[in-house]
Image (cartoon, rainbow, N blue to C red; front, top):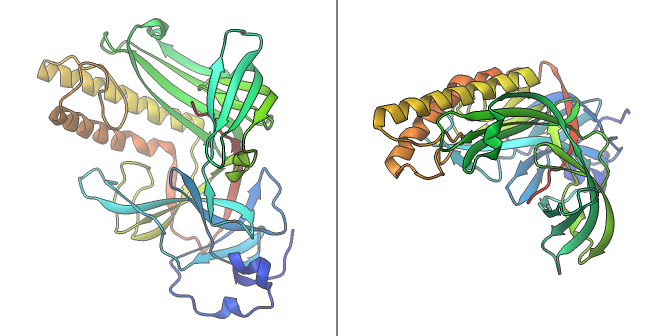
Length: 382
């Protein structure tokens, strides 16, 4: 797909066309620029543009830049805009807060809205008839909720790996942690989880699943980390516009953008290595093996660290692997203990994270970034 060369703010492409001189006006200092090409598992139409995406938790902000060249085959993207929203995080794990913003990339129509509301359904499942599972899917908002009554069949996802004591699954009180990921050019949802008996130190069971999302229909979805629901609609009621107010598919790319307010030599959340103040382009080269090795490292070290903590302090806290708080099952650590345990967790994360295979792109204008966009089915919310 070839296009005539044009330099325009992408939001103005549809209205102004390439005959305009707007692209030649000085818009300010360029803060981010890169050369690239885009491939996608969903066809990219002639009116598509590349945007930065920012997830606020309740909506998706779509942020335009300036596109020069022939999108999507060979183009230059640049922006003079600072992030519209930033968070403060202790990226280096040293107690120093840094302003940070995380961006994805997406190809969308040029006349896209600036904000896409996050309208995801909650799901209620009735297993009383295992042959035909009854599902109620509710989209809240608008003039009235949109409710879908579905009949579904459950297909188990592929179990890739398991280890430990499976009797933990029947324990009366358990603690757990789960992580999930998509990988570029792989239409599958991967989940890795660990479940531990809260009453038996380090008695744990781990498993890894892959759910094939390549053939999911409009009403199908991944439920739990290990089931795919294939559904037909029995009845609908309420505001039918709600499901279309957010992207039907989530987007995974092999590149992302991180903006930080100051130099960061190391990162706790995200193994990118040193970051320079401003925008940084990071590349995801992770593999399933590297991702699993990273999480197994975190879990193994966290279990060992909690065992050492209990031995040193005469406590009996169960192994609960998460960020904050570390222990949420009785007996809970007090605030001071939680802070100490969280510090141990932070150190563990930093020691294991670099196995996931990502890195900062330092020459974004000297190479053509081969950007891969993979659209993946949303997971069900409960």
